[in-house]
Length: 226
Image 1 (tube, helix red, strand yellow):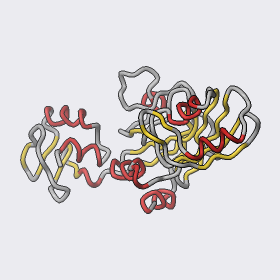
Image 2 (image 1 turned 135 degrees about the horizontal axis):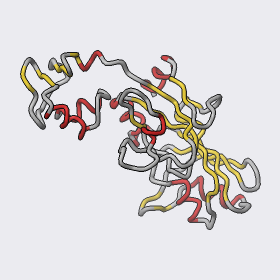
Image 3 (image 1 turned 90 degrees about the vertical axis):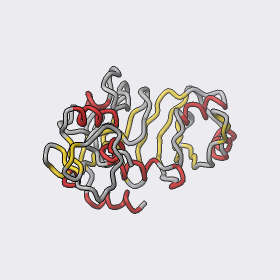
Image 4 (image 1 turned 180 degrees about the horizontal axis):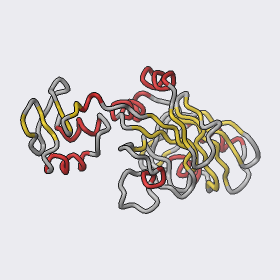
């Protein structure tokens, strides 16, 4: 793979950030100065500032994102999640949770684990509590469960259960852009509150809004094996 992708997978920097490191002559591959777009292998000896990139510690964080924060590592975007966390090392969000929503988002510098979680075919569960603008009936639950056509495709079947007259629980195994909001809109409902409470086996329980915690080694292992 290209050096940019490898450094991103290892959580060293973004792919575009790798270009800056190369220009500053901070990357050495097998004893030679790295060049832009260079192809490398995992087995190569790759040094950043004379330190082996493989020796960098991996970071795994569960954040309870508040409404108003945008899940992007692009620091030119206002209210981005990187500025919000102000974490001292390079990390990025695993997937997204739209600006108007709150709840669990994973942050890491492990590109390989992030790709595994986001890979659609792995069908990892994500659980949400959703409130809409009016009461709904059983036809809404049944219709949402069977799948809805949005963005030109049919969503996967999912688990939907009633909590109250205007609030429901939904478990998805895919992550289309604003999927729940668009699914609900198909039936004439507007989402007024959306909270993600679980990703695979990681739960938001015990994490205050705007706060975060490190994942345990067991939780990380569970994500790797899921």
